[in-house]
Amino acid sequence: MLSHMRKALLTVGIIIISVFLYGAANGALKALDPDKDAIITGSTRDFFVSEVIAGCSKNLSQAGGYSVGQINEYCSCTAAGAADITTLREAENFKSGGALSADYRVKFELIANNCKKTIL
Image 1 (cartoon, rainbow, N blue to C red):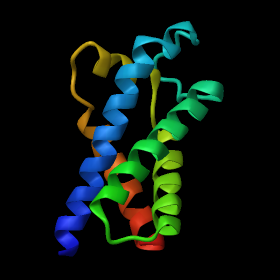
Image 2 (tube, rainbow, N blue to C red):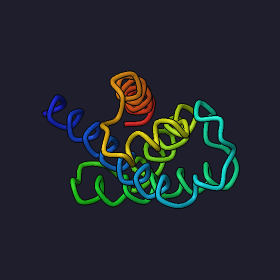
Image 3 (cartoon, rainbow, N blue to C red):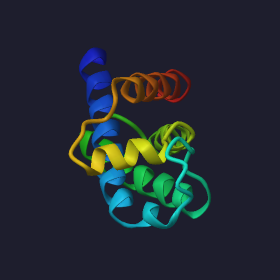
Image 4 (spheres, rainbow, N blue to C red):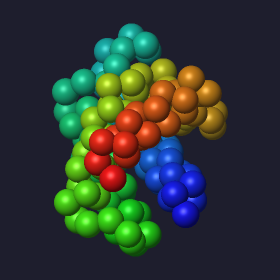
């Protein structure tokens, strides 16, 4: 059961990140600094975090098994951690049809697992 829930949490997170990166790369990121290896900041970061939290909360609420407080705390932790590693290059790569890099996926899974250990 825990293994199944772990996979579900990671899948939810990766899907949410993918959807955000696609949307952000199609609009909000175009006007930013051309440094492709820059981590997202400011209003772009705020938008990213809010979108990840919203999608994560919705998906985990539908999956069941956690309190609203646990879901909010886990999704906030995961979103903030993911924002800390998301670069403009990653967003543009995804926009052009590329997959999330293996490095990004590994980092995201570590973030999600750390949040899960401390919260869920």
